[in-house]
Length: 461
Image (tube, rainbow, N blue to C red):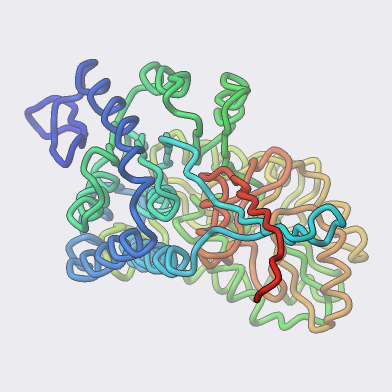
């Protein structure tokens, strides 16, 4: 983070300080030592802090939405309204988990040797955490790392995307104001070399990363650490001939162009049974062609520019590759700087790059299939998937398809982009390792410790 006239700044100990080697070590040492205090906080204390974060964010909703929209420059105000709503929801859900508790028990007397023994499973914080976030969720991704850390009792450093560091700092300020120890949370907008030094630092047993393929390099670099990865995918939807086509077209439009397509869950590939193919193609083309593009600060804008012109050129190249190989461009696809007009391509085949690599931009690709078995084969042909959407009015068929697709989640009668923030969330294969979602993330942040109480029954006199 920089101001117009000053150096890169960090958020350390509740204050903004210049980012240099000394301040980085100050932050690392502070977060590492703060774990001794955070692990002692009661569930009551942790829940109360999370509640106060919710109240604090709600009190400044409009100003926060304005700030994160302005900083990103490529995420629409409409998307950032939902960003803040979900951020608030993450902290609210986390407060509920803290109150319910994350400790458990094991039924020891299910084994003969376990008679007269009680087993308690305590979820102990693994230690200080390093959380690395991405630009497309400037506040929400940080929330998914910070709120579960509070539930677990872990101190945490957030390394934000260099494109949106102020959003992470703004969230951290609200968390510290709510009563979380200032030394237990730092935001460091580090370069790659400095980030790797903390990744290797033995004081941080867990790394949680949201972003691209570089996540696997992190996992390879520290094989003895716990590394949680939330990466991308080529989002797929399967539409059976009996599905509600209007519903599917509405929701696939919303799911394909949320954050201007810059979302790891975005709908990209849509496989439609041939009897319904032309109708669905017409319906979704009508909806996508009507999307409002332009200035992301305008509340009416539904699709804004991509993060930079290079990203837009990459999407443009995928469209050109597909049309050169026979795909029909139904609407959109033109580029003006970083803005790509929302595009629908029909008759897309597996030989086209658009069906194999993540576009991360405003484009959806439609392919007809002669059977749902073919749709499953095509869906599974791309390694790595977070969610797959399935549309059908036949429950038996939906559950059969859900069993056969490979993905971290299956959304029946919803797009791949559908998510609520307490559900286990993550990918298979190249899409990631581990799960987010409040309770699942707390499990990533904790180690189970079994405490066994053995006792001898006494005869009462």
